[in-house]
Amino acid sequence: MSKIIAVEHLSLDGVMQAPGRADEDSRDGFAHGGWAHRHDDPVQAEVMGRHMAANRGALLLGRRTYQDFAGYWPRQVGDPMAEALDKTEKIVASRTGSGPLAWQNSTWLGGDAATAVPGIQRRQPDRNLVVLGSGDLLRSLMRHDLVDEYLLLTHPLVLGTGRRLFDGVGPVGLRSVDTVVTGTGVVITTYRRA
Image (cartoon, rainbow, N blue to C red; front, side):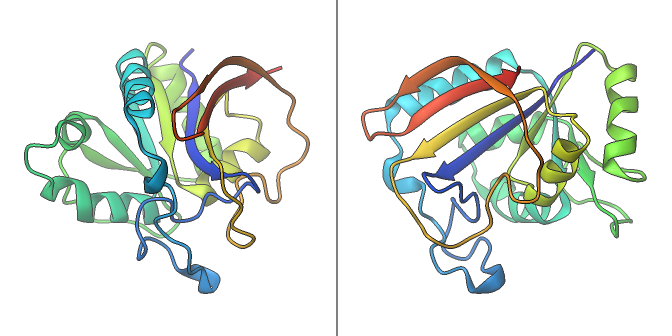
């Protein structure tokens, strides 16, 4: 059966909110958006490229993350990441979403994500589902013990506030299977369920 793989940027104190841009997600008054880019380097790009190549499949995104990505990536002409994301199937989980999705290769996931995702895994046993961002969706999947692997990019900073990856999730036993430290101090660790 396919795996569900979560790929997340985190601060040392577990914050996952708005790593990409200042205006990405200001919910709850979060004022530290864009915190991850100061740690970009070639090692991180190489590890992420390898990970993307090895985990061909579909992206499983929450509605907010999808809307944010759809408003940004299709406009990045000539960017290899944008081209890869355009070609990738995007499955959008939402309790309220309906109607057409503008970004190519995008479809709505019908019903409750925790109930619907195992059906996708059974129908497409050779294609992993990769979750990027999508905190609410990811926590729902974690509460139902559906996440098989975590690729966590832990950045060397403490934010003090913000939405955290494991908030509201019960105990999760994990084992580390790979770790790379970038030149900027980001610790990239792959964890699998213990």
